Amino acid sequence: MPASTELRRFPRQSRGRRRVDALLEAAAAEIRDVGYEAATMSSIATRAGASIGSLYQFFPNKGAVVQALREHYCEEFEQLWAPLAVEAKHLSLEDLVGRMVDSTVCFIEQHPAFLALLDAPGGTHAPAAVRERFQQLVATFLRARRPRMSPEKALRLATMTLQMIKAMNFLYRDQSPGERRPYIQEFKILLLRYLECRMDHPIEVKGNHQLN
Image (cartoon, rainbow, N blue to C red; front, side, top):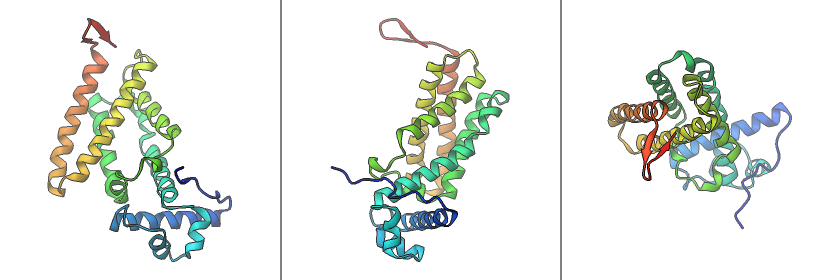
């Protein structure tokens, strides 16, 4: 049976929440510097200036620390994208794609541990409910641009968009700093052409069925 990655206890008082925030900040710094595999509970506690018992008081294992850190990143990223739900209807599709991609790159650059967590075990990923919120958020952007699009199609395109951005994150990580910007431009073209095609034109697939 896999080890639990749930928070041992959720701090209700501000002092406890600050302690958890400090531990997560230390975990991010440790993972940024040495990578996910090399980071240990002891090294995270030491970097935070806390006892190992204090760390275990909140987190049963490293997986739980990473899952909490990922959920924290998701909350920040959701706040970063949320204004687009209102602004999307006033943006061209090219500008909307640019805003999504550029804000993603900005977030990555401001949170260096994010890239180091891409290869962390699947059990440390954000819960399905968080992923579904992102899918619905991006679907809202797309329907703002095309109000007559069905919710089902918008959700499908949103899911594909998020998967493509996930692939971009791996590509960004694996390129040298000098090569990243040209690849980001290529990715913008890829995502823009996909959405232009799928939002404006049905596609004929094998069997003469239309994919709407």
